[in-house]
Amino acid sequence: MVNLDYHKNVLVECALPKALEAVGERWSFLILRGAFNGLQHFEEFQSTLGIARNILSNRLARLVEHEILERRPDPGDGRKVAYKLTQKGRELLPVLIALRQWGERWVSGVPSNPVLVDRQSRRPVAPMAVRAADGRALSLSEVGWV
Image (spheres, rainbow, N blue to C red):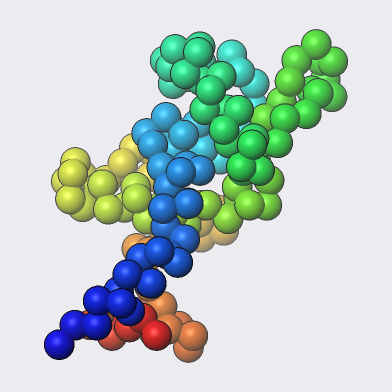
C-alpha cells in the first residue's frame, strides 16, 4: 500500500518547485545559456536572443533577485551594466547540459551545433547521468527517496 502522507511530505519539501520558480522558463534558460557563452550586456542578450526588451529586463531582474546573476558596473565602460554568473548560477551548468542532451535525444533527434566539447581533449562532453557516490551511473530503479 502507498503511504500518501509520506508522498505528500516529499512533494511539499521538494526543492524542485522553488528551483523552477527561479529559472524554470524558456527565456531564463536561454539567458543563462548566453551568460555561459560570454554574453554580459543587455544589448548582447537582446540582439542574440531576439527577446523583447521588457521580457529580457524582467528575466534578468528575476535571475539577479535569485542571485543566479549579479549586476555590476562594466569595468570597461562605466555607463554599461554587466551581468555575470554567480557561483550559484555557474552550478546550473550540469542542468543546462542535461536539458540540451535530453533535447538532442528526444526532441530534435540530432546533435546541437556547435558541439559541446572538453577544452582539453576536444572530445564531446559525455552524456549526463545520475551517479552513485562511487561514480556508477544509476538508473531510475536504482534510486530511492528516503
